[in-house]
Length: 442
Image (tube, rainbow, N blue to C red; front, top):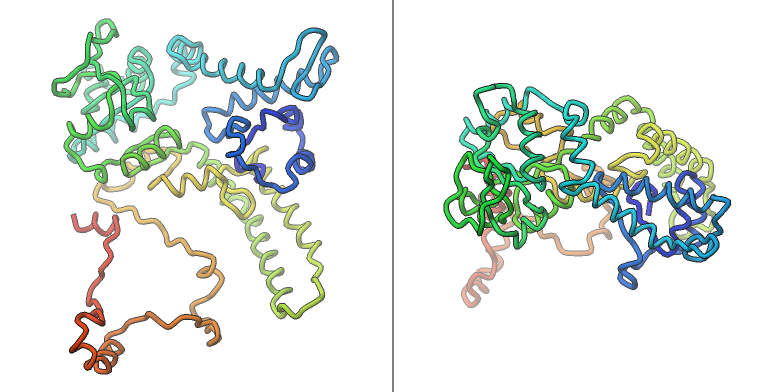
């Protein structure tokens, strides 16, 4: 596990989080896990993976508390925590308390939303391009659907602030359907009871709403099945925009097959480093090329192991400087030459991702986004002009062209008379229809 891939906390050995503020943690981890492999199935409750921005404050608080008590003169370290007289605090209990505290902060009456609502100008970024984009979406014929886990009172205050450019226009006019208290990711599964919100009081109507869903009304709970039926759209026709890799993107993709757009604000900084620190990336490519040259003329008969220690040290030095350019924890998307856990999830579940969904203003709504070709290792390391030795052809060729097909059919005429459809015809047009190509034909 690279140090930037994810924070995986071992609740049995959490005392080692005192080293979170030090980069000497690698050898400590190696002592506990010399195999560099963690089988979570043996004890699934022992580990907790933190991999979202939502959990970052909890990680920081957890590290600070463990560091404080582990170094406090009144407390002594024991196997599973710290002790002072008759008071014992296990690392598991610290972890549970921090989780409970962060959960409380995010509740409806917790201090996070309360303080945010009091200081919207300070905590909420307002952009006058937002109403423009929402209006253009609807003018283009799209149905705009807002689903939030926040309660009505908080949502109403935030949305009023974001969309108060026209005093005669209510913020709900920018959307076709609105759902608060959606409880994502449960919203994408079984869902909850659907109720209408009484805007004058902010309370919910008694009983479950079973009638038609109306524009301008606000609803609480429900499920994605209900609203998909109401909107009358196919799952592949939905572009879902969210900022939570699990609650928004992963679940909507896996459960519904929606097109997904992940908002990653940190991407702006990632791109700044990518462009301003290009020399670091070039140096790493040069080091890889140097190692390739050293091993070029060696094969399995070679007994001497080349000394590449200087190159490896140089790679570590450049990688460290590159990581520091991103920040103390390195890149959000890349750990050395590998993708981070987060980066891997983005590539797998997000059809689009950007620092802001307002980037859509710069594209016509008929635009078809096509991802660049992703080369596999055997494609990226072998050039088109290279010619492989004959012994590399371990299987008969499956290539087809029309002349070869005709020659082979002549040889099989006798068999054709007794075995129907022995040899498939070579197709004269493309037989695979990808999602983006299907969109082009719509």
